[in-house]
Amino acid sequence: RVFSPGGDISVRGGAADFLVLGLWVERQHGQDLLKGGFDGFYTYFATNGMTWGSSHSNWGQMAAFAKKNAMLFVPSAGPGYIDTAVRPWNAGNKRERGDGAYLTRSMDAAAAAAPAILSLTSFNEWHEGTQLEPAAPRQGYLD
Image (cartoon, rainbow, N blue to C red; front, top):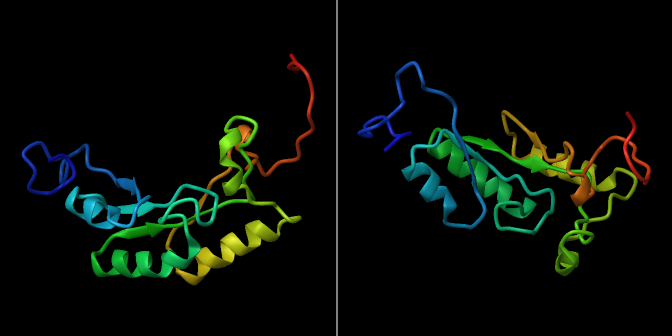
């Protein structure tokens, strides 16, 4: 209703129109995003294989879907992933950084899909171990 040009409360074509991306997690979400009037989609998760949409092996298919439907595909790369400090049950989704090797593989997989835009899942995700800047454990905060 909101993002489709013919929706009864559509923002399309007016002053409030903007680029809208949705998150593709499960296999069927492509059709859901298309039906919902989204301009495109991104994959968000920095873990290859965590979801159908974050699996690098599916990015070519997702890029083809986007092209066929005049949508934008934005794959999300990441430097690694480890969130077991806050989600101890999630060790199966841990991805070692390998001195930048995991980020390189993520970026290469994204580049193979030839996206117009790349998402980097990293900023301030300290609890998931996806930060890019150097970090050292410490107690408290600096003023």
